[in-house]
Amino acid sequence: MVLPIGTLLLFGFLTIERGRILGDSLTFEPLARALQDPLVWRLMWRSFWVAVVSSVMTLLLAYPVAYVFAEARGVWRTLILVAVVSPLLTSALVRAYAWLVILGGRRGIVNQALLALGVVDQPLRILNTDWAVLIGMTQIHLPFMVLPLLAVLAERDRRLEQASLNLGASRTGTFFRVTVPLSVPAVFAGLALVFAVSYTNFIVPQLLGGGSYSTLAVQVYEQTIVVLDWTRGAVLATLLLSTCFAFVLAIVAAGNRLSRWAEAGR
Amino acid sequence: MPHLRILGVSKRYGALQVLHGCSVDVAKGSVLTLLGPSGCGKTTLLRTIAGFVRPDAGRVEVGGQDISHLPPNRRRVGYVFQNYALFPHLTVAGNVAYGLKVRRTGRAETAERVARALDLVALGGLGGRYPAQLSGGQQQRVAIARALVLEPDVLLLDEPFNALDASLRITMQTELRKLIARVGITSIFVTHDQAEAMALSDTVAVMRAGRVEQLGAPLDVYDRPASPYIADFMGRANLVPVRVVAGHVLGVEAVAAALPDGEATLAVRPENLRLGDLAGPGWPGEVAFATALGGQVEYEVGCGFAQPVRVLVEREAHGAVLSPGTAVRVLVRHPPGCVVFGAPADG
Image 1 (cartoon, rainbow over the protein chains, first blue to last red):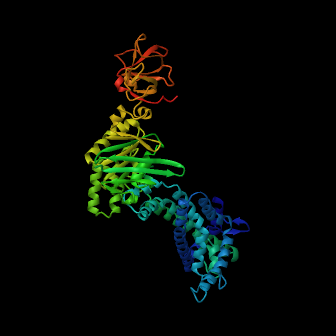
Image 2: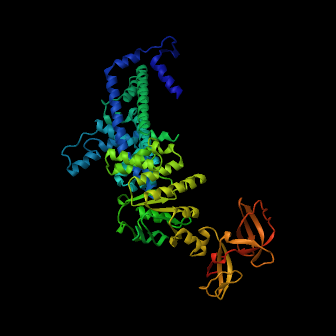
Image 3: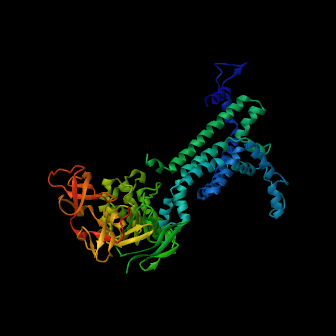
């Protein structure tokens, strides 16, 4: 933990010559330059909203899956669990390539199906748009949301729902008044997790967003691996890391605020 | 006309028949206890009334109306769960207001009714607390207030004292009895504790293996149990094998006019026995164990039956306790207080 972050700060804020750190070379000049660059802010904004939207999409998809798992019995439970966890066994790169095939161009599965069904006349342009990035991220990060929800929903006290019915609430009313509020801690744990991995993901935007599509994370990758400007790469990485940390803290704080009751018994 | 009627309710889970045609009537404003050991079906019967369990046969009527087809949220039946099932994410006031909010009751009326319900259970100042910040007894009162605030037709309570410690249990039993009398609501308790059933109810339904085995006032059930099982479950009883000849029980002056000659079981309560002279009548035996209870002493006396005979004796001022091994005779104090059953005692 300390070593990689230390290295990062080293490259970003100190000058290294012939393998030796120059002691008096501490500088914030590269950082200041990055902060004055409107491109950096644009990329950070895109990283942010893509992560937010894909986190929310992940939540909307994961909640029903976790709920169905909690209601299912025996073999069905095992099947759902395997379906949820198995994507974690393949690499994110492979899954991103899979989406490339599914979404890609005229011959992609999605467009072929839509054309065959007569829903559209022209193939939709999904690949190389924000949509492709959002869809790919949402699917790839789904397990991170499903797993915390699954644990909480499967273990929940069903007598509370019976009590709600007994007090006159409908099944839908019970779901929104009891089941959902009690899962708030898990929802926010999942949101924090998915936000962090989405915000820092550079593979999906690169592959599904197209060559000109960039986010802060993609920029870090390109500066470090392609341009070989390690100082700028390290500065941007520091920005990425610190803002990610701040956003995650904000999500956790919001979750705690909404579940103050959970602290009551302690 | 009974207020609540349970008519021939049966329920089967797979191969297990949980309820066999249970029928019970409860008068308006009276308190019924479903008493029985765990697994006898008493909670299933209670859950049937609330609508959580759909019976295979039979029906439930409240005020002459069949409510069997109604879902739980359409029945006017309050339910106090065994561990109270308070919503942890809502405050005490939020819990009590829950049912009113679901019914879209106005804000002012909700606040007023919640305040009144909390006053009723003496929790006036605690509306802002969360359930986790309350003691067990306070949680129980919140659960009761949450049910009563909706003014239900019937109040159902599933082992409401189980989660409380022994000293608090007695206090809460008395409090609850008074509260129910004040509100005048038809109530059904479930318990496995016969002392609790005695203390709380107007009527007791003793259940065994999915059947209501006896229904009656607690003292009637205590004095005239319908079976040896009930005799030992409702209070304690010694079940002694005896022989009936010409309508009389040999060795005891108990009358069993309705019984044919032959083997029978005599149910006699420990307090209806005494220890007598060695030379006199009664069952000869030997003290096996003595438990000093303070004002009383309970002896287990080996009389050659399958089970030792339990005898509860008043202890004279500072009287000594007989030590194990002492030879004694066990006599029935009041023979009409015994019940004779026409089958040999088990074992």
